[in-house]
Image (cartoon, rainbow, N blue to C red; front, top):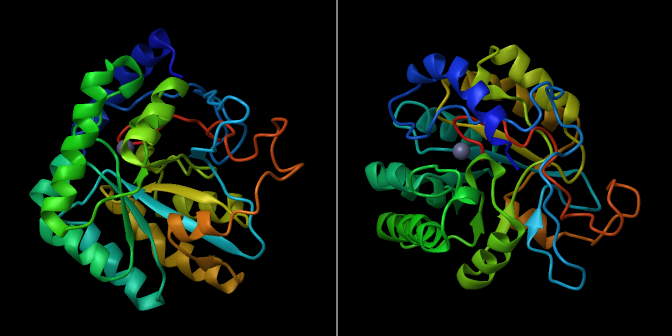
Length: 286
Ligand SMILES: [Zn+2]
């Protein structure tokens, strides 16, 4: 949950830097994060999103798996200049990624949506214009999501089954009806390198490498060239450590259920809040 006052205070200073972001990024200014000073990499969650007891799990920020499986996710694309480069890197290392697409970018780069799917990656819905869905009416939320589904289907014929709300922001109630009506799992993350702040490829890489553990869902943005620049080191290092990159749906299929101690919250292992600054993804975030 984003506190409005905080949001405003953060958006302003970052607005300028954001203005220089790649033109393909429709997102609003950096969305502020609920935890401004949050540790660079994953940490305790902030946004509180729990599902009522007894309800099927719809939100995941990591997955409890047996084995060194992880899912790397890239939000806000496709990006004309950066996504092809990232796809080349993934193909070279034979790894699978997941892309949470902005509907208007999918409509603009249908061939990149097709390429992502043709090369074995997964694509999910990240809204059409990257708004803060938690502050919108149900009708407006539905329109953002449906328009994006339509754009991705028009581009590729594929109907996404995953959704990541921009900034990780959705109310528990929205999660439930969106999941029900669209058949989605809502995907957050447990590793956030804050790559949108552009700390440099080495920092992005070291944050991801340090925070990744089995079952992690790693957040990044393929609209930032620095992020893509960091990937050779990220991929090589994590592969050398024995990690296996799978799509988010493949990771979810390995879910063993609640991990007694992995989660700080009683019982809700995977519905835990978005780890890290939930927010912080200006451009994206989620
Ligand atoms: Zn985003």
